Amino acid sequence: MVWYHGKGEPPAWEIPDIPEYGDEGWTPWERREWKVRSRNQELAENTVDPAHFRYLHKTNTMPTSEFRTDGPFLHVVSESKVETPKGEQTGRIEIDTCGFGFGTTRFKGVVDLLVVTSGAPVDDEHVHMRLCFSVRKLANSDATRGVGQAFITEIERQFSQDIAIWENKIHLEKPLLCDGDGPIAQLRKWARQFYSEDV
Ligand SMILES: [Fe+2]
Image: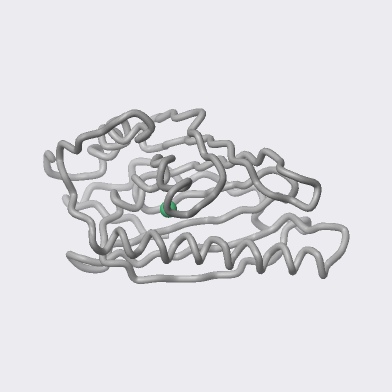
């Protein structure tokens, strides 16, 4: 991990431990990466936009049930309905973001899944995004592999839908928000601390 501060100040926080890292009960990391013409803040706003999960990604429902900030940390919990062979079940998604460059997303339900996300701005227009995937092993290794592949395919699908929007949207400082748009204003307030100039 690399720390960068626009005015050369030293690191102001530590990234959290990932308890799944090195745990035998979890599969080895699978990595995917993208170079996206966007900004870290736009990518962060994606996580608190419940409406787009429903209407862009076509997931069932996705209300944000919890949004909490603590200094550079942001904690978002959502619940979603997922189709399973045993019928519709509720899954829980916990997103822990640490600054603009590092985060974890944990899917908890019938299967437990982890995505570690990191994004680094590489020039004035692009962010290099890396996603690392791990799955809590099931009793059967073929089933674990199948779940892992389905999971990665689904996230890749959602991510490519997001990229089309990130690369074509315009940032409005004062967007017109309506019911169901999620805590965008709170997220932007939280995000201000990561700029070395006032924004
Ligand atoms: Fe998205």
